[in-house]
Image 1: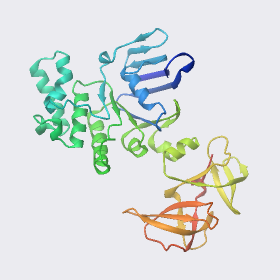
Image 2: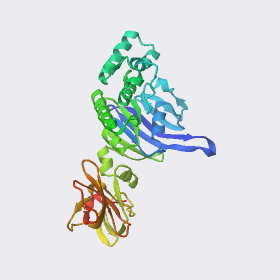
Image 3: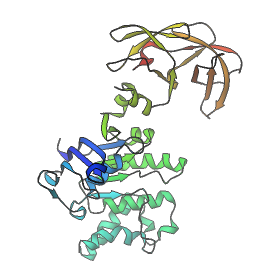
Image 4: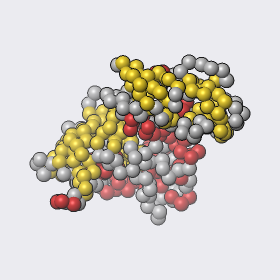
Length: 356
């Protein structure tokens, strides 16, 4: 597989001298042809800065950036190719559409700047609009479109000159929750159908898992972990990854004994078996909410707690259990509403109860 994008040991600071604030601290990554990589992480982790550096909108301090076999940034040689020569498709969070131009003219704008002939522009624009289900909207203005349609116009504008890589900065964040799910499915389908190579910034782990082939999780300017969505979710290497990638319960547990990956815990006098993840296993103990099993009778590797309340989520109930002393809170899913005040056994499967 050929790499469409290669970033090597990239460093970027804001400010200079003693007051310099390092944002990227040696980030290396690649993007293969036809692959979608999501840059995921909390605010301030460096994901948008990395995307903007690739686009040529931020100036790194050191490292290299290659698009295909073209070098676009080399810190050692003090070389930086201007953004407009990098030939990348950009989709911004705000869509950045011209309000006074029609859909057709918004999409055609970049081609006109490239001095392309009118007939070729018409063919290319009509072709990309048709591909994105916008063929009938070419003469409308942005204010006459829904949020989802505006987002597609922004994508059409990025795709119209067939760039090797498309860069997406929080592409779904302006949409409401319902439309966001539909747009997520549309974007994934479009990427697969057109064989796009895309680098996407998001802070939403569900979005990253749904759309991408690979996730790069950034934490404080460095890559914390990278891998397929499934490996990141099911086999996190660090507590940060585990907490960021899912909905978890944290248990106040004390490590009693450790033998390789097998850990024995004490949780308020209850002995539980758990699995060590990562090298240290200092005692931060978590379990995904969906892995907790609720039982009315005593079962193995379980803790007994009273039910505080249940919240209806449509396809299931989310149940909140709290110990009498108040220092253990556990959430679990149930298909049925349970009786508040009653006590239940909450089974915590050994291989899903993680100690970091």
